Image (cartoon, rainbow, N blue to C red):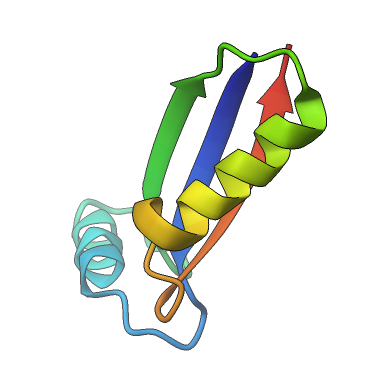
Length: 80
């Protein structure tokens, strides 16, 4: 199985990296870009066969280690 994880800044949190990318795109002629949010994407190979246990473990890892739940949201899917 494989976990695909996306971590993004919360909507209420200032995203200076996203704002920088947005400004760069505008200067390059992409004026129709309203907002940019920069986050992280991770893929984790899982060796177990219990899908529900894998979901619990990935959720726990995201909450405790991979993201900062104060300023970031995360979502994931388990494949395979």
